[in-house]
Every structure is written in structure tokens, then in C-alpha cells.
Image 1: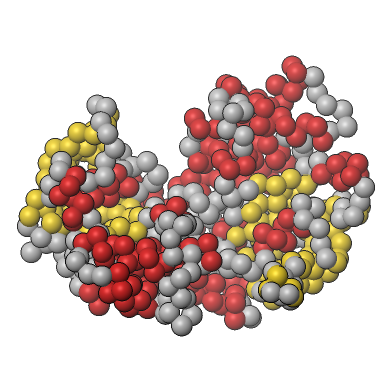
Image 2: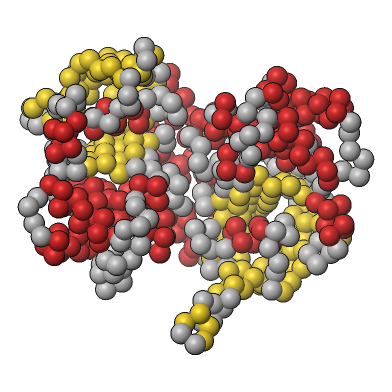
Length: 546
């Protein structure tokens, strides 16, 4: 008997179709990958199964769990099922977990809600469950709070909450999207092990066919509120029939066409011996030793060159970038921009040089003032120019820049919340480029985007580099992104650069264990597409040439 059977499920919110004639089944011990671009209905499918649809939703069709219809309209009955028979793991554990509760209490809460056990007995279940997800009590006491854990460790706590009572069905909604590739690989391996040990069914929701190909037994592709194709996971590489499936595969392995740079131009950014220490915390009457986040890092970015800085979470990438941009003061070392001293320079000199080096952050929405229109956001950097344009000229420049990054001139009058994630990242690029810089620094600028949007942004970055002669310093945890956008690669671990070289050479012959580990953690579908093969004209290969 199927664990879950959905038959012609239709969901509408205030009359707008959200899911259309959706049907699927999943068997015990099976992993089903539910794949599609942002907004196609994947998460709404999960919420419909959990009975967590928003007010105003109308539902028709049926959802059966182990042959029994789910009481979707009876919230009290569904509360007894959620957590006991169906568990869910959300994308962002820090928002899913209660920051005021210890990790032991959060797992124990699920146990006490559904069973008549004491707090002590519930904590014992929590202890065993956290150990199952590789958080043993001797290293991770039950008294810890979520903020004391890394992103991957918090996601393990969220998984422990979901599996504490060994549910029949587990739903994981983008459980690894915000994690670095090595942590993502470990989380996916953990989910596969739990399915194998408990015989439960798993719905893995993702936008990335490469992740699903490594994890699932079967794939269901969603597009525009409906499932358009279902197939064994082996069909992903050999070829799926529907155009949306084919597009997702092409986007997953996409390498944008861009002219490779020889790296022989003059230096536009030079970093020499940067060290960044953070003071240790106070312990009783003495201070703990300082923490070294960046340890003697030197690098050069030349005119028109794209340099990839790659490493796992916590390796020091973001601290290095903040120091390079003079947003953080180094303990020692120096940064030169366009050949002139940047760190330690007078404020007026830094302001003059800041026009030449601009930043694009991972989360554009978090870096925007939501009350401002796009024109205000993009034109904010005009204060860095020696001669600032008047209102009319400023408007014309903003409109022209929006069109350069693939938006429309009238978008200048809209607010950030009116755009998709990919469009907001285009706005962030427009803001960075409005001063016509020579260097753009990107910190995980595409890691939170779905594969289709990511492919579009990478193609845009390649096009802007060719047209404007931009230099990039691109920080990421994803080797596929480095391959797509970089001429040279710097691999970072524990605050140090442990390997560097031309992108093709690094991918062909990785020398350091960290580089090999990052490549090994990359999904197999992507590893196969990242073969270090360049065409004879020096143009990086596109997906059509792979």
C-alpha cells in the first residue's frame, strides 16, 4: 500500500489556481524528488499535504495517507497527524526553530504533544534522536540553543524534530539550498540513511535536478501549478520528454558563454598579507584567545579578469570580502584599489576610490530599504561621484542601467517587494554598476536562486564582463559557479588560501584535499558537466557543447 496517494488535487486561493489536477503516489522507503522553478507550486503541495494552506484556500480532490483520507478541513484532527505521521523539514532552520528553546526541548516538544510521556522520557527520546542525526550529547548538549550551532547543525536539529516519532512520511522542502556543498552532501546523505533505516517515504522538494539525481529514486517535475512529467531518476541524465524537464536539466548544467581572460592586464585590486583577528570572549576574569578569521591572505585581480574565491561556510570568505571593501579593519596587511592604498586611507580618499569597487550581496532584499523605489536604490551611489548628475540626468542613467541588466525603464518606479528574487538581484547589479566601477565583488550572489534564475544571472554577469570589461571577485561555496564565471580559482580553508590557479587547471588536477572534497561534494550530474574542456577559441563551453 502506498504511503501517500494524491488524486486530482486542485487548490485555489481567492479564486486563483495554485495546484491543478495534481496526482502522485509514493511508496514506503521511496524518495520522490519534486522539482520545479520558484513559484511552480512545490511548497504549496507540501502545505496542502500538511493541511497548512492559508485562509481563503479551496481544495478539491483527495490525499490519502496509508489508505486513509487526510482530514484536511479538520485542523484539530490534522494536528494529531502532523509530527506523528507526517514530518516536515523547512528550507531555513533558523526561522523554523524556536530561538528561545534549547534543542533538546524542541525535539522533546514533538514527543510530548503526541504521546503521554513525562518530560524526562521525552528528553531521552530527544537525546537518542539527536544522536541519530549525528548530534551526540557529548559534543552537542541538549541545553544548547539554535544560535550556538552552524547552519548544517541547525538543519540536523530540524530533521530530528521531524523524525522524533518515526513518521510514515517525511517532507523536506529545499532542506539544503542555503548550505555549502559539503554540508549539503552530508544532509542529503543523512536523509537517505534515515529513509533506509526507518522505511519511511520521503518527498524531497528542490529546484535542482542535479541534487535530485543524486538523492531520489523517482522524479516528478512541476510547471505552472501541475505535474508535467514523472520518471525514474535514471531518466534525468538519459533524457526526459517534457520541455520543462529538459529546460531544468539545461539550466542545472549551464555554463555561460564568455571570453576567457588571460589575466595579463594591470592589477585593479591587490591584497597583501591580510590578517583579521576577532577578540576572544570574556571567561570569568580573563579573555579567551583571539579568533583568526583571515590568515595572511594575498591575491591580485587584474583588469577584465574574473577570480573565484571558493570554500565552505566559515572558512573566512565573507570576512575577507568585508576587509577588502574596507567595511572591516584588518589586523594587519593592506589593500590597493586601482594601484592606490585603500585600507587606512583617509575617509575622503576611500570615498573617491569606492566608486571603482562595488559589492553585490547574497540577499538583495536584505540590502535594500523596502520603503525606497528602485530609482532611489540604484541612484544611491551617485554620492560617490565627483560630479553628481542632476535629477533628469540621474533618472536617464538609472533607466539605462536597468535596461543593461535586463529590466525595463518603468521598473524604476516600483518597490523591491514587487520583484522576484532574480529581478531583485538584477537591481542589486544595477546599483553596483551605476558608478561604472572596474571591480565588482559578489558574495554568494546566486546561491539562493533557483537553477533557472541562476543560469540567467550568470549569463548576465558574463555578458556584462565582456561588454564593460568588468573584473569580478566572486565568492561562493559552489564549484559549479566557480567553473561558470571564473578565469582563476582561489580555494580557502580556515582563513588561508590553500590552492590557486587557472580554473581549467584546478578542475583537471586539484592538488589540495579541500579542493578535492569540494569537487567530490558536487552532485554527480554537475561533476560530469564540469569537465575542464575549453574550446579552441578560448570561449568557455555552453551547455550545448557539453
